[in-house]
Length: 630
Figure 1 (spheres, rainbow, N blue to C red):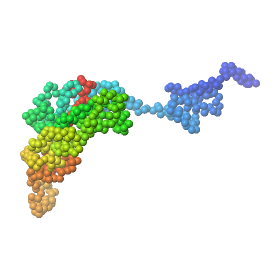
Figure 2 (tube, rainbow, N blue to C red):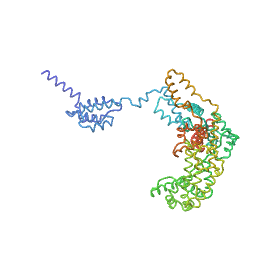
Figure 3 (spheres, rainbow, N blue to C red):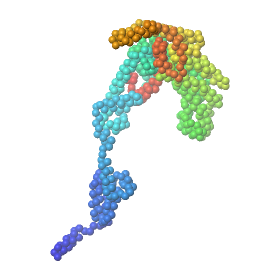
C-alpha cells in the first residue's frame, strides 16, 4: 500500500505545482507560430513540434504540424507550391522546406561576381573598352565621372577602379597615334591619292578645316580616311587654305602622289587649288555645282512656292495643336502618319522632300487649316497655299526626284563616282531636263534654266572639259569608255589624251629593270634534275621554233587603248574596280591610270560628312574643348 500512497502524494503535488494547461491557448500559440526573420527551417520545425505537445491533437498531430509549416514559412513561393501539391505529407513538406533552404544558401552569379577579383590584365581591357566606346559613340570623356556610368560599371565589375578623365584621355591619344601610324603605312603603298576639303564653324564659333583622302589599294578596294580636322583662325584666304592643304599632304608623306582635290565652288578654295599654289588638279564638287544650277532654276518662280511651303511646314512643326490635329486627320483619312519636312538651304534635296511630303499629306493639311476650332481664319489666310502652288509642287516632282537621285548616287564614298559626272550631266541635259508634253510653263522654265546653268558650269559647250580629270575617269571606266554622249571629234580628243597619259606611264617606268625571268631560266638550266626535261624542251624548240616561248613584243599604248575600247563594256551595275581587278593584266598601263583617276570622289561630301560627327564632338557639354584638343 506504501507504493500506491506515494503515487497519490506525487499526483497531488503535481496538480498543485503544475496547474492543468489551457488547450485552447496552447493551440492558438501553435497556430500563431511562424518562421521568424533569419530563423533556420530546422529551428522553426522543431518549435512547432514542441508547441504541439500540449495541444492534444491526437492522431491529427502530423497534419496540423504540416499545415502550420506550409502557412508559416517565409518563402511564399514555396508555400503556394506546397498548397497546390496533392497528397502532401509531413515528411514531404519537411524535405521540401529543407531543400529550398539549401538551394537558397548556394552562391548566386551576382555574389560570385562580387567576390571575383579584377586583376591588372582585366582592368586594362575594361579601360580600353571604355576608351573605344567614347571614340566610337563620340561621348565626352567626362562620361567616366558620371554617377550613372559609375553605378553601371560598379554593378558589372565591382572590383574595377574606374580611371580618371585624364587617364582615359591618355588612352584615347594613344589610340590616335596607333591609328595614325596604321594609316601612314597604308598610304605609303598607295600609288595615287585624292583629297577633299571643306570648312565649317563649330558651336564655339571656332572655324575648322577638314581634309579627307581617298585611294585604291592593291586589291582594287576603295579606301578613305580623315587626314585632319583643325582650327582655322583668321580670314580664310586662298593662301591660308593652300598652305593648310600642302602642310597636310606633306605631313602624311604623299605630296608627290596627290592627283586631285575635290572642293566646293567658293572663290577662296577654288583659288587655293590653283596650279600656282598646289601641285594637283582642281575638281569642283559636282553635287555643289548641281545645287547651284538648281538654285538658279528656283530663282525664276519656284522660290515663291518654296517660301510659302516653308511657312506652312514651320507652322505645323512648331504648333503642338496643329501637329496633333494633323495626326488625327491623317488617321481619319487613312494616310500615313508622317511629319512634314522642312527644307533647308544647306541640305541638298530637302526641297524635293518637302514638296513630296506636302503633296502626300495635302488633304490632311487642308482639313486642319479649314477647321476654325484648330486654325484661326487670319492664320489660315496666311498659311493656305494657292492651287497653283499645289499643282506646281506635284508637277515638279519628277524632275526634282531625278535631281535628288543624281545627288544621292554621286555622293557615294565607297564606290567609284567621278567617272559618272559627265555621263550623268549629259543625261540630265539631254533627257531629264528636256521639255515634255504636258509640262506646266513654270516647270518648263525651271528645266530650261537648270539645263542652261548646268551646261555653263560644266562647260559642256566647249572642248575644255574633254581633257579634264572627270572625263579621263569616264574613259577609264569600262562602263562609259565608249563616250557615246560626246561628238565624234570630242571622242578623238579624249582618246588622244588617254594615249598621251599612257605614254607618260611608259616614260616614267622606262628605267625600271625587268628582273626575275633570267634568274628563273638560269636556275632551271643549272639544275641536274632537269636534264631530261631540257632535252624534251629542245626537241620541242626544233619543232616550234626558238621564239615560241619568248615574251611577245609590247603592243604599245595605242594598241592597248584600241583593244580596251573594243572590249565589250560591262553592265552599268558592274563595279569598275571589280572589273579592273579581273582585267587589269590585259591592259597594264591603263590599269595604272585607272587606279590613279578612279579614286577621285565626285563630290566633297566626305569632308562635309565629318561635320556631323564633329558637331557631336564640339557640343555645349564640351564647350571648353580647345582647338588643339579637338
